[in-house]
Amino acid sequence: MLIKGISIKESNGRKPYPLEGCGFPLVHFVVRNTSPYNPFNPHKHEEKEVWYFLEGKCLYFENGSETVVEGGDMMIIEPWDEHGLRTETKIKWMCLG
Image (cartoon, rainbow, N blue to C red):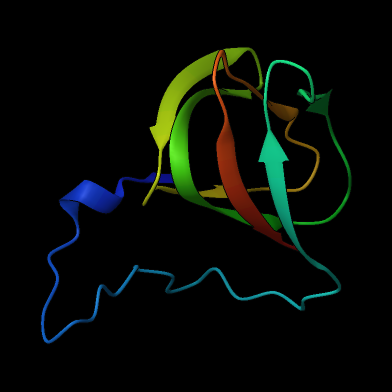
């Protein structure tokens, strides 16, 4: 599920991302940089993940579909969904899972 950051209204210096019903235990937190020289190839696993994109722009792959994501966007990835990233520049993002 893609949550576009640009569509979330900021109020009092706060931008609340809607995560109702998305609860799951966290076992890792990683900040990553993906570039043409450091791609994040499609893969899948049994854990749910949340990816938050800090800066940059890229193509996000999920189960054969492509979506453009950029800084401020969030992806919620369900278990066993194949997912990965490709960019011609650089994107900085966080993975919680």
